[in-house]
Amino acid sequence: MRRWWADAVFYQVYPRSFRDSDGDGVGDLDGVSAGLDYLAALGVDALWLNPVMVSPMADHGYDVADPRDVDPLFGGIDALDRLLDAAHARGIRVTMDLVPNHTSSAHPWFVQALADPRHRDRYIFRDGRGPHGDAPPNNWVSVFGGPAWTRITEPDGTPGQWYLHLFDPAQPDLNWNHPAVFEDLEKTLRFWLDRGVDGFRIDVAHGMAKPPELPDMAVTDTALLRNSDDDPRFDNDSVHDIHRFIRTVLDDYPDAVAVGEVWVHGNERFARYLRPDELHLGFNFRLVQADFDAREVHDAIDNAIAAANLAGATPTWTLSNHDVEREVTRYGDGARGLARARAMALVMLALPGAVFVYNGEELGLPNVDLPDEVLQDPVWERSGHTERGRDGCRVPMPWSGDAPPFGFSSSTGTWLPMPAEWAPLTVQRQQADPTSTLEFYRRAIQLRSSRAEFTGSRIELNTADEVLTLRSEGGLVCVLNTGAEPVPLPPGEVLLTSAELTDALLPADSAVWLI
Ligand code: TEU
Image (cartoon, rainbow, N blue to C red; front, side, top):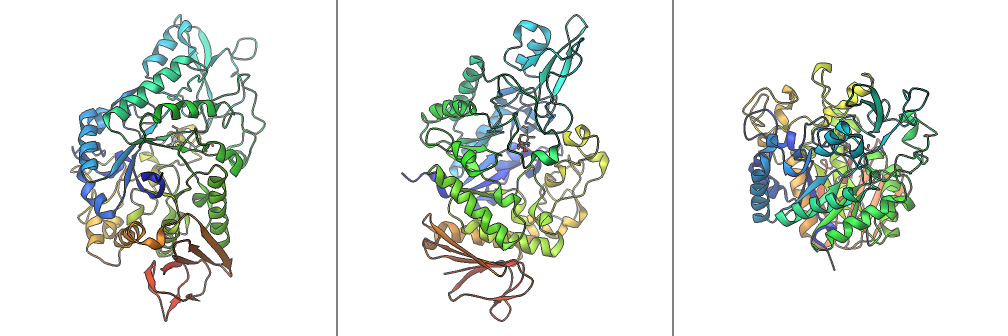
């Protein structure tokens, strides 16, 4: 059976930054509803909303204090119901972020755990090491920098136990050996699915399970860890029991989809998450990690398809999200970075499987260099101001007008400042310009979803002299030129190009679709 998500274009909405309906400078769900006509015209099939549950926002919603309600900042649960109705009326599905690895430190379970040592077993509390227990239980580091343990003060005022947090101290890790944690997640899944939500993006899907003895890490340097297979914090075998559990619940809702954030090394490890009784889809980050280089892009595609094939699953494609530098900037910034990002969009949209577009990508937004004093990502503080964090890819979307806040909000006090140089990048300006990145994206998505050449799951890749040629089963040819010189086009009728062709040659930093 062909599922709706198997070739869908998902649009990732970072709710703080899409559109603000109530003038507080922070985007919200009625803002998303107000943008639905725009999204329908863009041609997207589904939304993925970053977390909107009740949260103190220490990590902008990834610290959930009540998993079964919507934060008032985003308009409360009625705003979500309005969005579900309005999206479904336009044939757009809505998926939500789910955060099962940790809760907020303001979650009632954690508040209770702090107050009473008998209620700590839903989290990971341990005595410290050393004579006075003043050293952390092991050497684990937090993904955001610094130790992954924080010591609490006991109710009687004495220095007490330590709790584990792979991210911020405001995000204590749950103990997935506790049945209450499973029961509560099932309640949460059914709560949203019964309300009409079409599925979930599962945060840190490779986390959750921890080895019972909590062994020390062999490597604690974050830069080295990125390429290390030996990280006891993640990808433990028993995580698959959790995914199987989630799947049994989702199977009661045959159209619902679960897509996991799976940051693991190697295709074998990745494919385990996509076995028939686990996740439907897994984010494959190989395209995010590839440089603008034909060989690297070729290998990224090959590996992503090989990983999906190992499990008989659908591949997924993404160039950016709310955690990584925007691709325009990654590829060199300025006109060149934008040209390359447009070229890569044609490559991504030519591929079989599910595609994820991050809000603002369709406008060609670059990352923003923000001044120190406005930075909000916990990474900035936790790294001792050595890493600037992810705020630069989360700046609100420019909609209209000639100056900030560009129609995003009625307030100039947007939660992150918007650069004045974004005036030419607004939706309004780009809609009026047939050569704009927005019009290019719209056309590409429309062709992808309407033309028979895009069907079929097999593709053939060839790379020679910095030129990648991709042929789909349905007869689409996509050529990407990452070299410095223009190259001749293969025979065929041009469907779309990311840049203007000169004398029937494909310029450097561009791509073309032919049939
Ligand atoms: O990101 C998880 C994350 O930080 C990954 O980088 C991964 O866990 C790491 O590389 C280790 O392999 C998710 C969200 O996307 C992010 O925005 C949140 O801050 C984070 O979880 C915590 O909830």
